[in-house]
Amino acid sequence: MAKSISDKLERRHPHIFGEKKTLTPDQVKDNWERIKKEKEGKERILDGVPRSFNALLRSLRLQQKAGAVGFEWQNSVDILEKVKEEINELEEGVRNNDIPNIEEEIGDILFVMVNLAKKLDVNPEDALQKANNKFIGRFNYIERTVEAQGKKMEEQSLDYLDSLWNESKKSEK
Image (tube, rainbow, N blue to C red; front, top):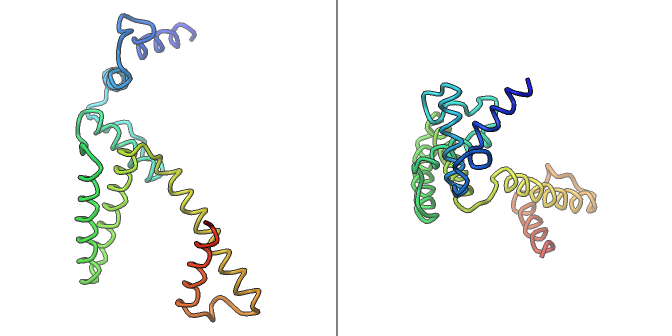
């Protein structure tokens, strides 16, 4: 058992145990993927990204693997242009009330946004959690304010609730 673990470590980490000690971090990552692909019998680059990952993590990992072989945008501006293109396609789906297309385009937008986060070295999971927490804080502010006035949330106009949302944003600064 110990021998197989040792062999695996040496095989997967030639930059530490082998002759390839002068590899750059990107070369180490590329070498790691090649070694895993050969050893594990993967036929395709994207093989091995677990379907059990949540969609956000799976999207990130798929894009990391594709990017490792050069299939990625070179700059953030190009990715933003793709986001705009996808939003335009979503708008068309919404105008036509084309639910299957709407779902597809929302998925495309999320996928491209994960790519943008990756390009900008932002962890998309962390970014989304922060957005969730910010939303909770602002929504709770609205709820507390309405309750303090002796009112019910569901009886308030969207315009009024939105004004409280903006008030909450100002109080954060």
